[in-house]
Image (cartoon, rainbow, N blue to C red; front, top):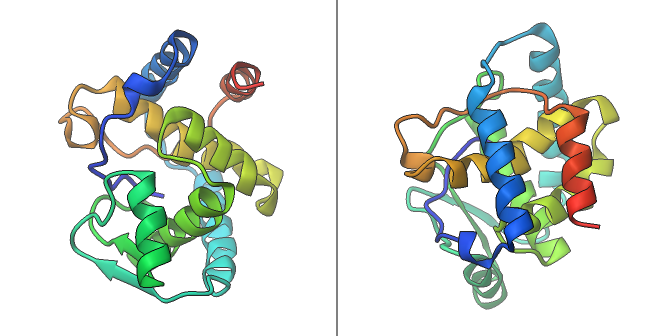
Length: 189
């Protein structure tokens, strides 16, 4: 949750269909207003509560650090295997309704139970795979927000020329429409 990484450009591994859909989702993300509602606040509280439970189940130490520890999935996997710790970047943005601590715990859950458990990289398809791997742990009504946090942000990073560092990039707390989620599911069948 929350934008944070300076990871390598994975756009070159996406096929034409993936690139087109990724840009469509990035354009959707860019066009949406970041309107804060009671539903958004409650959804983030729900996600944070669940993430905090899963965080306690991570079987190795988690180290929060100032520098982004991994530029790609292989580095994440190898570091965990070699060091026996999970390193998490403690900078970047934090969603409006989440404490910094809850956001960092969410990142650890995202990497451990998402990327590592599903064995998927940081590409568009990898983020989709991770989302599908973890989504059943969350109530259905928060999944469109979780989709935006996981898949939507990944697409926005490709859409903006400067990725997370682009001056036009802002973290957005928005619920993805079912049409975008369905189109993504169809793309990766």
